[in-house]
Length: 395
Ligand SMILES: Nc1ncnc2c1ncn2[C@@H]1O[C@H](COP(=O)(O)OP(=O)(O)O)[C@@H](O)[C@H]1O
Ligand SMILES: *[C@@H]1O[C@H](CO)[C@@H](O)[C@H](O)[C@H]1NC(C)=O
Ligand SMILES: *[C@@H]1O[C@H](CO)[C@@H](O)[C@H](O)[C@H]1NC(C)=O
Ligand SMILES: *[C@@H]1O[C@H](CO)[C@@H](O)[C@H](O)[C@H]1NC(C)=O
Ligand SMILES: *[C@@H]1O[C@H](CO)[C@@H](O)[C@H](O)[C@H]1NC(C)=O
Ligand SMILES: [Mg+2]
Image (cartoon, rainbow, N blue to C red; front, side, top):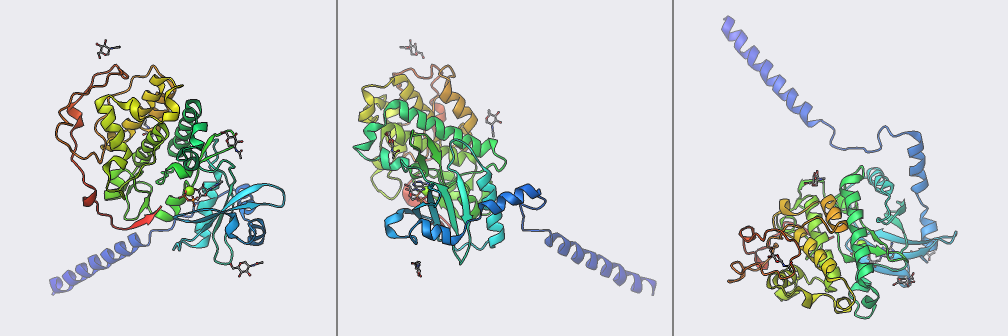
């Protein structure tokens, strides 16, 4: 009798507590409201960021074609002029984000708080009538790609200017990764997201967008790959693994583009020579790297400095993310010539070719002075056809 009563009773008790625990764990808050508990003065700054849609319509002539600066993955960008005379760039987001407006606005306010000499300032946001508009400062010299990949205009960029641009990008990225409160991974670093002010100081744009619209996580694996082929680190493009080291990869590609003046063709092109990482690596191994520097550079530039830049770029595009330096190391390497650099290992996406691996590391320029380690340059040959991506959005 006693057993017949107690056993079902105990069993029922355990079952109920199990169900309770399950429910309790599920009800943990999923939504993080970053502005919870903010001080009144911060809420005031939120209000000052919100702009009227009528103001922006007037500033951009009702988003007319003539005012359009360009179009990217998140939407079109329009030039505008505020009544007080300030020039602005308005990004009209086309994304159908599932996020609520309040949460989105809070995230944008956090991004607006990131301020650095090498970041484009977000001046305000506007979310009315189903529109999501981001208002940035306007930069008269547009983006780096418009100068760097134009055969005429790129002659303006002598080595001193390019050096300054690379250094500025590195400092901006260091701020995003390590110094800001948000620890942002950019995920879409590329030449068209580097804007130049009147003195050709570089400013990184579109940071925070990938974090807000592209995915759910700041670290780890994501099923939504946001980025641009050619700049994306292989582990990110293929497995969705994001980390600060995937940004470092994109930075490396950017450095190689700035030094060679060549646009990375990326994957879409079946011509391997279009892949800048391989292109540079092959010359580096053969010791003929000087051939591929931008012709408008070669005569008047300190070779050792340029080669050191190529070297840093190659360290950034190494296949193994943990071999790549982080941004604070890069800034140190970049600023001090006395810091010796490791020999780079073979970059990712290198099409395996016989003779390439066994070939001696014939770097005749003696850049590092360090040991040339050939054993570390083993990598799995990757083929463009094997890439599989779960879901792809253009940035
Ligand atoms: N703040 C800005 N000032 C001047 N030009 C800008 C600004 N923001 C964007 N642009 C220009 O608008 C173009 C489109 O920008 P975007 O939508 O971010 O696309 P993407 O970066 O993919 O090219 C860029 O190529 C750039 O030249
Ligand atoms: C602005 O353009 C929209 C369509 O894009 C149109 O409906 C609206 O009437 C226009 N407003 C003005 C003031 O021209
Ligand atoms: C763009 O940069 C050049 C320097 O190369 C400078 O002379 C020019 O004034 C800048 N353009 C604008 C619109 O500020
Ligand atoms: C960058 O690398 C240095 C040296 O390895 C290390 O001390 C530092 O913690 C790293 N920074 C980050 C953010 O990982
Ligand atoms: C280059 O480095 C090697 C050893 O790494 C050294 O023997 C040689 O003298 C160096 N050459 C120059 C020009 O510095
Ligand atoms: Mg952009």
